[in-house]
Structure formats: structure tokens, C-alpha cells
Amino acid sequence: MARRLPPSDWPPPPREAPRCALCGRETPVLTEHHLIPRSQGRRRGVPIHELPTAALCPACHKFLHRTFTNAELAGEYASLGALLENPDVQRFLNWLRKQPATKGVRVR
Image (tube, rainbow, N blue to C red):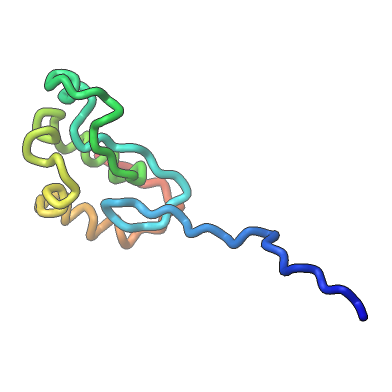
């Protein structure tokens, strides 16, 4: 009688593509966005490694820093929920979700 080999776990199952925490698109690259900017966290005496972060696609990350000052991000928009409630962010996300994730998006 022939022996059977145990089932193999190779190749490993494919991982899910990473998703942006703001727009929800699957993108090949994500960047780390500090919900409270590092400069503002240092002023408050919080170590940088303890600041809350979110994984964002480059387009969302650029939009946030072009739209809001660090003081606004630290005060009014220190959570993803607060960012999602902003009408400018909602309008940008509605447009961005229609764009392919591989397309380079220019943020003004």
C-alpha cells in the first residue's frame, strides 16, 4: 500500500490586497498617516510611536495634507469618523472611488 503525504500548505494562500482606510480601494501601496500629526503630538508630549495611525492610499494622504493644516488635523479631524463627516472629504472620496487604483491621481 502506498503512503500518502500530508497535505501541503505550499504555496501559501494569496493575501488580500491592502485597502485604504479612508476610500476603501484596494491599492498596491499604502502610506501611514498619523491621525494626530507628529509635530502636534510632540507639542502635547506624546511619543511618536503612541500616536494613532491609519493606512491610507497616497491620493487620500496627499488630499488630507493639502486640505487641512496640522492644527486642524490634530484638533477637529483626529479620527477617521471625523474625516469622513467633512463634506470636502466626502466629495473627494466619491470622485476617487470611481478611479482605478493603479491610476496616478493628481491632488491639488
